[in-house]
Length: 280
Image (tube, rainbow, N blue to C red; front, side, top):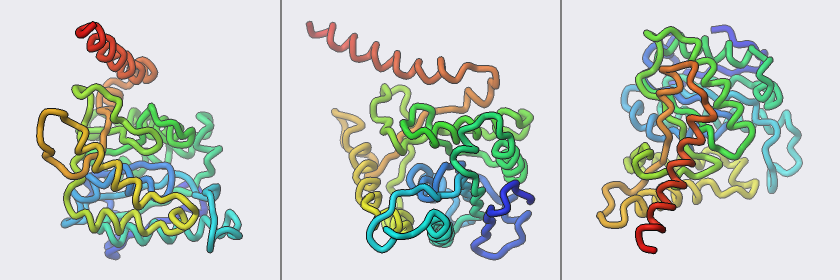
């Protein structure tokens, strides 16, 4: 596989030939930064753990991350190297089929005229033909996450119908999705093997030492999602990640993304209004 950036990194943790490793993929995550995969797609990592059928893709180079403590004086180039190594470690811990780091600057991902990002993603999707794809959700508040969502959707829409995944989920990272009406929530059960989930987040010490306690925050959010899901029922899971079903946006490539996304907010508004009126 030839990727457009000279700095791109392809890693097969168990050493199998790349083509064979990519072909075994059933679950694929297209994420913006190192550690986003482990936050938004643990559901897929667990699903592929035993047979190494999960592949992770990091689109950006990780150079602009916050840094403190041991990493405070690291240059952008040094941080890129650190984060690349951390992502490889997570891939080993999670038994990934393949870990690809495309090393695009965030500015390139945000520019819809820069077609090399989409070209890389199309090549990966054709090589893997996954059943399930995990993306950032279109209501995320991080600009780079939203840009990566757009480039990923563009790549998925290029595929012929026979190669499109059966399910595409937009998952929470920099905006929780607990605000979704219950009927719109896709619950990804992350209850299994919490020690593995903790190790995966813990692989990114450059972020944790930099003052971002993702190791605590992600476990807390997943537990909160599970506990606050249903007010009149006992918990059926101990950890949940919420997602939007984005499959219709891929199945119907001309469907308007803004209208599709804002319809979730409209349904929330309607739900709040109807409940207020019910007891007025």
